[in-house]
Amino acid sequence: MQFLFYMLVIAAIVFTIFIIYIINIIKTGDWDTSLKILNIFVKYGLIIFILSQIILSIFSLFYIGDGLLIFVFVIKQLIVTTFFIFIYFKTMNLLDNLNNNNIFLDINAKLSQEIGLYFLYLSVTEIVIGFILGFSLISSSGSFNIATNNTIFVYIIVGLVLQIISKILQKATEIYEENQLTI
Image (cartoon, rainbow, N blue to C red):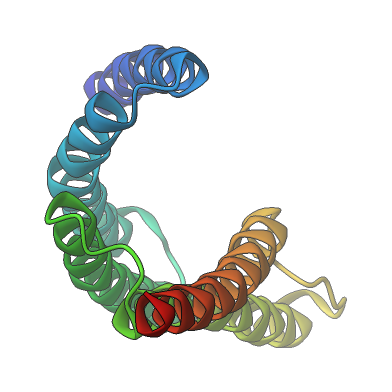
């Protein structure tokens, strides 16, 4: 178990350094380098995240004692992993369009909207699982606590920001198409 803890600490440190590196590149305004790094992050970072979700699901089978809690947690992990697989493929499609310099396309707005919806679905999953775990604790301890965390708010914020970006991109695409017809 200590080995897993040390691996998670190392992964967190590496991820933090990587995020600081991305922030510095974005601040310089180098779009091509930013896009290359985002491609690497999406291709490999999300795959690593999905694999870690699967590994955590397997570990949870052996370290959580109550059968109902195991069932609920494994179902949650499967749902979350499935949504992140969908997010991975939609994001890859979006980045492929950006790499090919196809920015003002309706499909990009639709992909952004779908990715945002998946994040909103993730927040709903967190809430529902929190209530299920809370209700399961009533039967064992007699008290009700919603078992959830702050990821709900992160998922909601990311989902809503992507919805806004989708609408902006949709309007920008309309303006771009009008300008192309004018020329």
